[in-house]
Length: 495
View 1 (cartoon, rainbow, N blue to C red):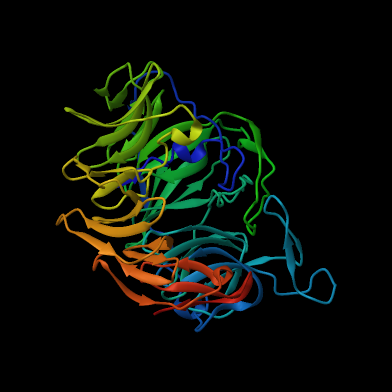
View 2: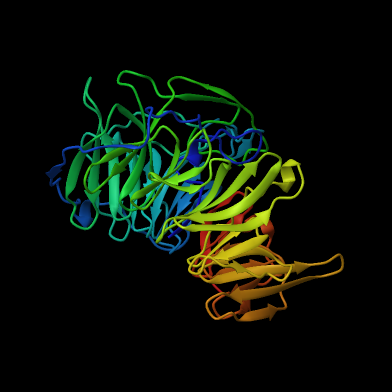
């Protein structure tokens, strides 16, 4: 697996002014090298999913009802959506409408959140907590319960004893649960005792409990097996971020916001093996790659577990991590020089010298990695299988999926596009334009052409659509359209 390094560790980096949601503090960890502690594992079998007849309704047709609408979450296969909608005139002015503030807050009628299965009005929920990677399962808080919903049947089960305390973290989902591979993980809290992670197998519906040191604040899956858990001391409050970004489930896109530090305890980062219950901590900044930890000591260098892969002279910023074998794409600062390297055990390949001193010259943005490709800000790409740099011939990668790269060659007078298949080496020139959206193997260009990267060609045109109606493109090549700007219902449109 290839993963851009916006992982659990970087998930909590404080943002400045901008449109991306802010998060939290630098993470503390116990002193010393990575330490491992084995924990007891307890296995139980919870009640089965509720019968379909007693489950959530599955409707048909468009998603939601007419009126002000915000998308909260969706299944890319089109099975469900979570929508925030204003459906009633709650302010008594004789109409149903909302207005957005500068920091994403809204005014006007009350917005409620609904989980819509299949289509129709849906079911009111309090929080959309998490969704499984395949989109089938959804964790929601409804009526004071954490519920696991099978969106294909509407059946659900209640996660007994789940910790439902919210931390009010702006821009982030509720902390109650996450999915890791085919497992749901949530927290049970015991009075004056360490928290327990509950790992529910989605296939067997069996659960096991894993103790974790302290009070679990937030969780982030590193892989199907390993979970990063951020803990505070027993009896401590959760960290609080000071920001102008609005809080709540139903928020608009902020035009700007600021962050002004954080109060409360500094969380400790722990890595928990969901199979064995083993807990690993590190005093350094750490990112998990499979069963191994990449860490960057304050004294310099990069290590995979205890093995050095970059010299101490490298003041490293990790940009991406690659599995099988474990490798790291990193920017090293040595004095005034900054270079980008690919490091691994017995591997050190210089990829790029960073030019310029300004913010915009920094190579800090990695394209979401494909199966076989990882790209740095589109300026260079690496073949994950061979560790070789891919020749873009002066072009810039704008999107990566699988073994395919969508590349633009721009001059002052023209913009030309091509698809590179790194598996075959084939380069296909296209008469297309800049991309509006991309998902899976599809790219939608500014002329509403749908490009299939696998086939290396345009497969159709959606016709001119108002930009404000287009909400998303899914991996099946369908567009999600609003009835009008900011208005429901939503519907999927195919070619």
